[in-house]
Amino acid sequence: MSRRLDGRVAVVTGGARGLGESYVRALHAEGARVVVADLLEAEGSALAAELGDRARFEPLDVTDEEAWARVVAATLGAWGALDVLVNNAGIANAGPLEHYTRAKWDAVIAVNLTGTFLGCQAVVPTMRAAGRGSIVNISSVEGLFGSEGLHGYVAAKFGVRGLTKSVAVELGRAGIRANSVHPGWVDTAMTGRIDPSWLPIPLGRGGRTDDLAGAVVFLASDDSAYMTGAELVVDGGMTAGVGHR
Image 1 (cartoon, helix red, strand yellow):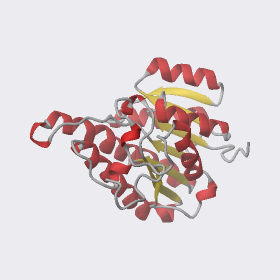
Image 2 (cartoon, rainbow, N blue to C red):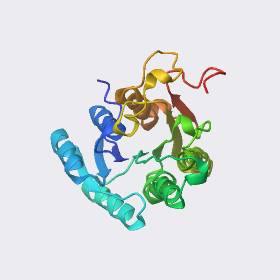
Image 3 (cartoon, helix red, strand yellow):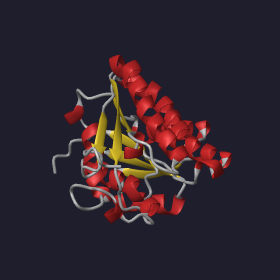
């Protein structure tokens, strides 16, 4: 193990399970101290306890500015730094446009887009003072093309993609990088009702959570030191062909 993140401190939102858990484990394995930030207290606390002294759980509703301030303060209080933020927390809902309710729209925009914005905003003072930082925003292939019925989700993930670029442009001279990751279909609780065999994936299988973890570690580490404002697509080739839709 190369331990590319020795001495670094990372916060992962939605880190208690699914893709978030895989990011937590991968960052921790590379030497980082990791905050599991999630609403799922039992799962998050259990994961932090399993990983030991270099992990801790902090409750976080990503739509709550005060909660973000508490997580940042707790992280600095425990470890004196905050070098990496992985904005992973997200939800999905769907429905035909004429029946897609305002409540569905507001819910997915609040978590997936506003939550990402609040996270970026919350860590800037600390990262600016340190003269470095890596923000990794988890978007989706649905941040690259439209998808029937997923109106709020698509809008939010396109928004995450654009927000990442504006953050990168504004904060690059402060030593803060921001990049987005765009997963394709990955086997998680959120995607369990979708059969990946329906999808044109050139690599011939759906993604696993650990397929994404390497991309997040890469963007968190100095291996990507000259990357900011970039889109890293990890989809088994799903978006590569003209006929992918």
